[in-house]
Image (cartoon, rainbow, N blue to C red):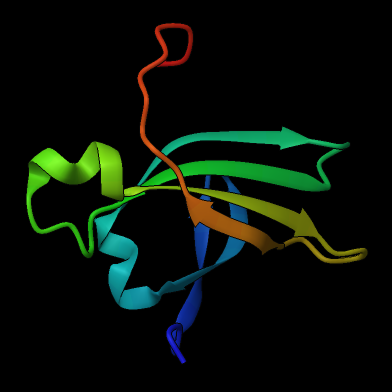
Length: 94
């Protein structure tokens, strides 16, 4: 099993369970998060440099997007979709 020790991360004030081992948390940078659907869905764009050998490759191999849902009567978000994403710059969103 790839994710053996997942742990909640606090992302912009929200508790989120991502499919990432807690040892990787120090390598995670949150680039952007979007709360939607009356706070039931959280979309997260992040950079995880855990497995990046060469920093020049970060834009191509360190980006991920996570879509997380909040379960009824719970305060945390659980990842329902997690996939690679190429990091792009958008001047509208710093």
